[in-house]
Image (cartoon, rainbow, N blue to C red; front, side):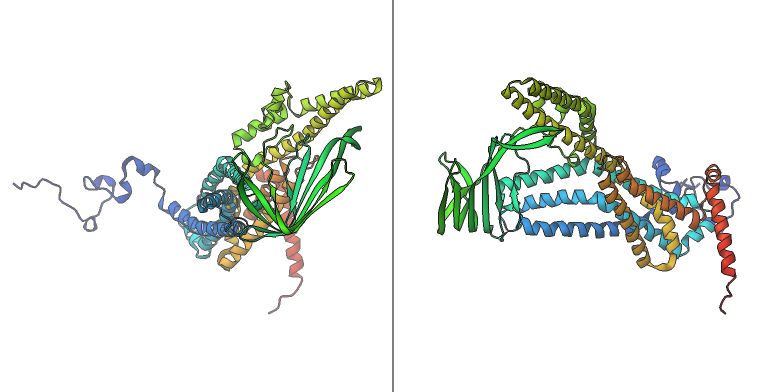
Length: 536
């Protein structure tokens, strides 16, 4: 008796079996391995098609992203490189730019890769072979839609959370630049100053420079300083009211041929930034504006202290929708609509004033009430101080009302854009498959051309539609979704006319007029064409 009790191996090439019960005990093929996880293993054909999409997707994504990044790097070299900014800070900034670039380039790569993958499979007759083997058209098509669904989720995450965070970091970097080196914020050939001006500020400043070289040296510098006065005879008409705006006048003009940013200690022993001006002069008006003093330093230099940037509370909305994640975006939009303007970041001072304004409608009611009180006070000859104070509050709240309406529109458009952009990935894959079947053996050049044409159509509608959505008589959703609607309509038309995909019978019944008109038109066109003899 043999001590070896292991089953004897059988060469299946030498036997014939008629059912699985006749297979040797313990027989197993490769597809049976993997235990529980084999249920989640993709079929070989599906995996093959997905790989065919992945390769051109990565190539197209790298191509489009590289173009966007090249433009950003060129801008950085002109503004920041060689001006003393730490390299790792620039690297962080490039990371933020890269994160904001992907939501734009991923949809582009989706369309490009879908057309190229479908065109190659169709051009090499692989789709024909699949159909001849019994593989259904929906199964082949579903692979493109699955890939589109995955990219939709990725772009949605970038749009909802990562993109706004990158935008916020970029704005913080810009603010840091203005503190680190104010000269970097100067645009050659343009006057620059504070983007916002405090309502009760007494002075304002602007600065002009002809250019900044790689060492930070300025040329053709001019600094203007003016005084804002509450007294004066200037008025503006606001909601049919004459609102006194006071007056303003130039106090000082500094003109110099050269300038350089320097750091020095002040009387308190703290370092402060100054602009050392050379070869110039100063023109100053005395407080009564009765005479002018001119200081000439054409053969010398003077230091102009850069005013320190201090945070000033103003009654205005200074929130940008592109810097908030989707949950925060919806929360702030609700606050502007009805929840309460005092909940908006930057308007906490309304709580300090003891005011609770229930959205845009509530603010409009307060403005109308103030307007009525001012009119009644002017007719009854009320106190001038009281009317002046109400005028100031009325002008601020009126401006806040206009800002609130514009900001609410911007937030509504941003919400629609956050959802419309990810969905474009799915729509592009829905379009790319029938387009790829049309291209067939036309080559990759035709695939690239078609992709570029449809991308131009998409972004033309997206940019133009988003712009007109800010108009009062245009729905907020129309702009961000117009591009998706147009591309979806084109996709459906190509799918029905250039492939053998058929709509469900219930939908075809509702579109019967279209099919009847198409059949009539094709019959007439064929009859006209047959009247002309064909050349042999």
